[in-house]
Image 1: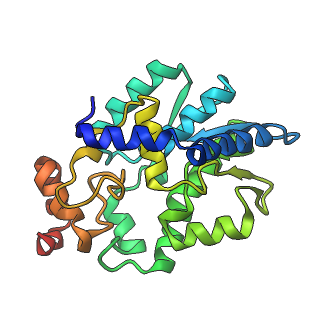
Image 2: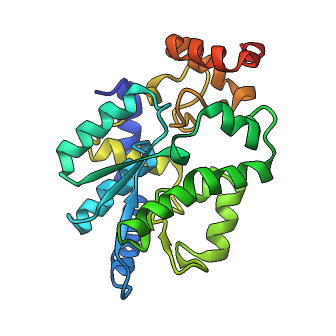
Length: 260
């Protein structure tokens, strides 16, 4: 299942034995339990089947076996994600609901409206894109199905905007529309995530093992049509390990050739 070296596995297993790591896990479980105690909130979970959300799902499973899992299918996901989704569903028996990323609009339309990630998309354009393409469809799905709260696997370490949001709003908060969000992994590092995955023997997408141009900690589960990180080896990584998908991306966006 994994392509980690024995030394990597041993490092993560030893880290998972540290009292500080165990306290972090217990804190996240406590955050989840406290969220379930909030009155009149019907919770769901937004899961991408990347490394962070897989940890979130396992933590949730330790607290409940009745939460619906929401998966936003962009139609541009790498096959490893779907394989991991099947393995995860067998493991937990949660109901997994699929919805389409941004109502299934073509990626070219996304680029035209919001810019191209890692190439000409500004931070403000990125925030708007995330709002329109991910947050709004996710919230709409939840409301249409009677849910007014969502667990998600975001971490402060990932970006300045996520750190600012969590520091400002807290790990569990209600937005102006009366919708709740909870981020039990907010204070986790990438090392915490991998230590948990290894120590709990969780299946994960093999794309994280392809570390030639990017480290395991920073490889993103963003789909083959995402150019985010183009200047940091993302396009080279895609061409090296998923050449058939790189060819599709190059056909859609010839400019990516300049990053290889």
